[in-house]
Length: 328
Image: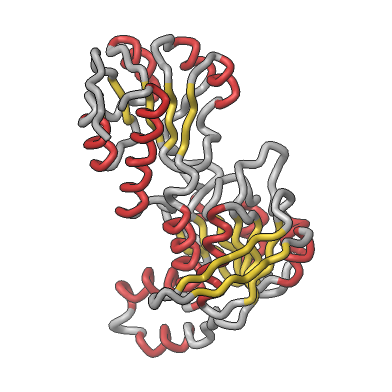
């Protein structure tokens, strides 16, 4: 299908960056894509001075009511990723501004990061990677001894809290590893998971969700895939107490889902064997206690940060923008 040239270049500010695939797709249609990183405090001025009509963000830039009111040129707000808790979505839509995201573009990447954290914690990589460069040449035998009680994931039970796209992708990988999968989700009663193999064979596995308490009590590994919480923590002191001794917990969803102080207490007591965190309560300045804890595998909110996911995100945003503006 051929695309018509738009009469006047629309300026798109990709304030948190945009993959080259998305930039190329938009510029080919006649848009001007600006990838200058504008500080939050200067954003209103920049948008108004440059007549920005579309703003694309990831998780860093905040698009709140005050900015929306101050920038009448904005017609589209796009989030490269899933969660939109950094955007006042309902208010923007009440002002007839289109708000879009890319819910399916990064599912595989986030799910794979979950297992990167699980494999790391199960074999103490988060600790050995810190200590080997410092004392590996002088305390090799001691370090080897301290890491001798690693565990396998195969045959263990993984509890998935939130069975949306990412949760189902986690289930798919877990089934491929030979894990037992249990899940909790108030909005999903049953999920049919298709596990594909390299030779075009596949299996379908139906997973019935159950109450959260059951998942907390029976899982060896727990991974969270839920939106930002408005009414307190989903996992706090009470929920940790329900879990198995020696459980592992991974959060690649949103900061604030887990009470970090309660997590540290559970790690220190041995209730939780290890944790994997990609998101934090105080981003971009996480707690020093969290950052320095030897039982926590850490990544700086990089769940969607793969070449493949960013390519899909860029193309998805470009397609949606063109569709909204009827640029063909």
